[in-house]
Image (cartoon, rainbow, N blue to C red; front, side):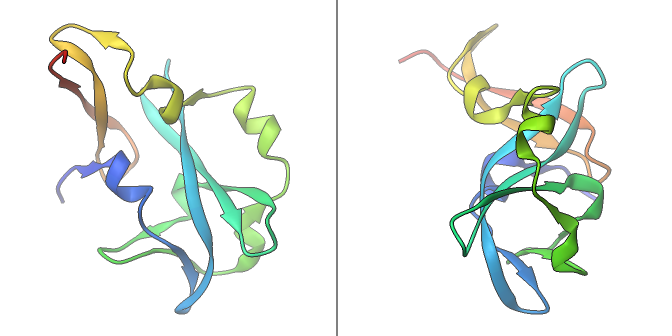
Length: 118
């Protein structure tokens, strides 16, 4: 399996058997472990929920879930323990600024993609 762009994953809808539940707005990363924890999802009821990366089924056209119960209410619990991809984008790294993060299928960070300074 190939690595996937975290930024591209944020463009995919979260669906349960084809029914749209929400849209990811951020990806939370466990920096010390170098892996994705999960998605912050803005759901149809305008509530943010957390979807663990391990509970998501990543397809080309969607982030699938087996149950709506996989979307957890306490997003702040995870935000306090993780790094926001959105906050990392644009921060300085060797070779420019963080433009994206590539994730292996298991959620491990394969690479940080630097965009040249403008």
